[in-house]
Image (cartoon, rainbow, N blue to C red; front, side):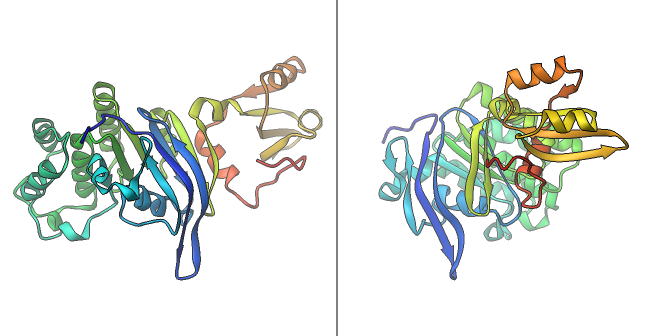
Length: 301
């Protein structure tokens, strides 16, 4: 079997139901090889279900996952090229970390034992401790060790920084970027901490109510939106017919986050004396997935 260092994943009409409830509607999406992909969605949107299917923990009811041109379900040996770091692992509770590391080494073809021990020391994890003796944050760090040291062609992280303080979260992001640069692979990272993880995402996939509502490079998504502010009547006139995701009014002054804008739009508004700036990925996510958001102009996503 040839083991590739990166993986392209294609979802072909993936859907999933649990007890009559649809968790995922038919999804068509592609995660390009050698990139860090952000997987964003509100609670219950279907992110974990999708990760479970990608990793082989669950099978889709319909559709298929294709990895480097091969249907994953038909070739179970491909699962050795996938590392899925879940929020917590109940089956590990009674095992010592040393034992778990030995298991990872046996099952991950790209495992780097020296790097794993470096991370254990860096994160102050005692190999003699049992998994159930770790705090929530320590469990997250041990998951980080597994995901990073596996060097798997496809690495999936589900909320990898739960329980970590700001300094430790930044340490994880730094380690992820450094090792990814040295050993490129395909990484999917699901998180609710969008503002601080935006720096590492090259591509974004937004899931809403079990469907992929948006998938594109991070830069292209951010370039589709802007903030515009000025006198209320001038902002209203400028954004007429545009998709306004959010508004904030203070006296006669109005600020708006506008979606699906062009460079020409922004230049025109600046010439009109309006203040035009960028907006954050987190704000875009919040307002794009808010069913109650005030949308003007009737434009769909």
